[in-house]
Amino acid sequence: MPDPAQVTRLTGWLRDQLPDLFDPAQLPGAYPYSYGVPSPEGDWRYLLDTDSISYGAGLWPFYRSTDTGQHPAGVRLSPGTELYAWANEHIFLGPSFWSGDIAEATLHLYCGYDGAQHWGHDGKIRLLLAQHTAEIHPEIPETLREQAQDKADKLLASIITHRVARDSGAAEPLTARRHFRPDAP
Image (cartoon, rainbow, N blue to C red; front, side, top):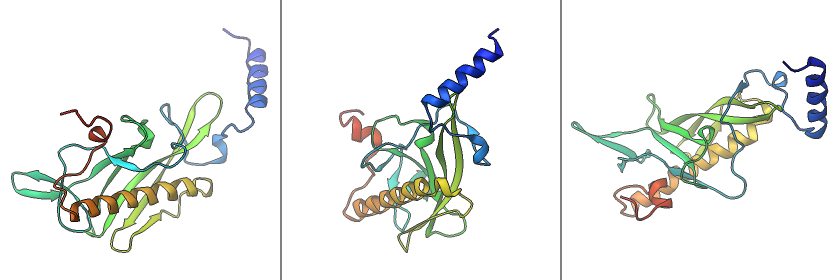
């Protein structure tokens, strides 16, 4: 078993080397997230990461066919930076049960690394599809609001892009798998 005094010295040294470590005590609601990573750097967009989806009419473009016809379907989207993005960067987005012109999601926001593990925080967003507006929940902490708004804006842009593709005659959406592996079945 390591000597607690040595561990304390090592932890202090590590904090001196990495001054921007996240302090979870400063952000109520933060939780340890072993697969957490920061959002991709640079210019990127969300890609549809769900198979068996087709386009349908209305403000919400994603539908799934069933025995009873086509129905609006929730979808998973991921950053278009690589085929399999990290877990906290995937977003499950779906039409609201209350209104057909609203889509809702819970974002997994990246807080930081504390020297031992990564930390995340959840935050809800709403996309007002008719108004082309992305709203983040007021309870998202101030330090995470820019990240949340950036993700919400990118999600809204993805929905608009898919509506344009649908309205231009595309029968089904381009998925992340087809984007990165165009020859795959």
